[in-house]
Length: 350
Image (tube, rainbow, N blue to C red; front, side, top):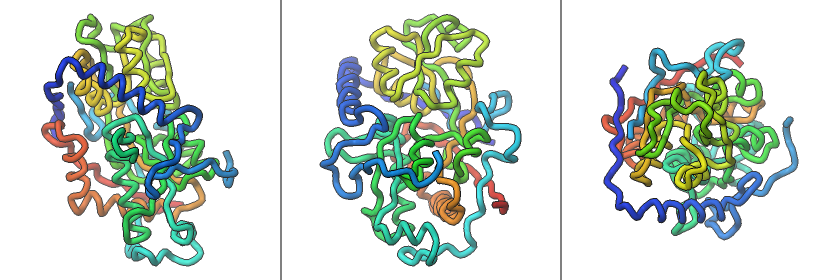
């Protein structure tokens, strides 16, 4: 297992926090409320998806494989076997543009586009470029790669911006085919949806102002700690023996605004997202040990095992052909040394 991965934020002008707040405001204006569907006016491959009728039931970054002594995320045990194992990909995947007749993959191909939910305010994984209005990030690149594997060319992915809390509901309603949005796979969630193999390992940590005396979650008892609703981070904070006051918001970018204005004492989410905030605002930094391991996987609606297997085949190619490493270099270049690629774990069961 590789040693700790250290992220050194680049030097940023001291005027940047004000720019960051403006950028966040722009993103929030784009994202809006509810399911955070972005307004029209985007290119075809980035146009948002309107909600459809229900088709089914309701500083230091350490993205590395699970470390000894770090708790697993809530709901990760009991009754589902290995929550990081997913269906084995087909030995011979279908060729682009030739999805097997009668399958959900064929229905996607006939529709003409793959529907993917991504985050709109969580760089470097999913965000909206303020200059061209298009989605971009590590998760967006993965979704585009899956679309290319289905259709053979780019431009066949329709993105829906989603909040953390809406990731599972949009799948249950049948609004999207996949969710690529830094979603931790665990047994509780697997009772509702299917997951791909893990494509990113993360660790939950804490972000505080430089002048804060807090050095870990233990020092934040009775103080407001901000995180996004609908995440495993909420469960970890609520179980903390120091009893912080958990404040949830729809979008994690809101937390940075609240921290900058002194309305919360800290932010908690995954280390790479926090490190991105620290790179944007030099007045904050990461503190304390990892609080939980967060293995991220792609969400797929239940009842479409052929899609899950296909996605796993695409992920295997991404990990094998150097694409994953290139994506890390593109979106998380400050990670030194680069994190180790996940090793897929498969099951042959239904």
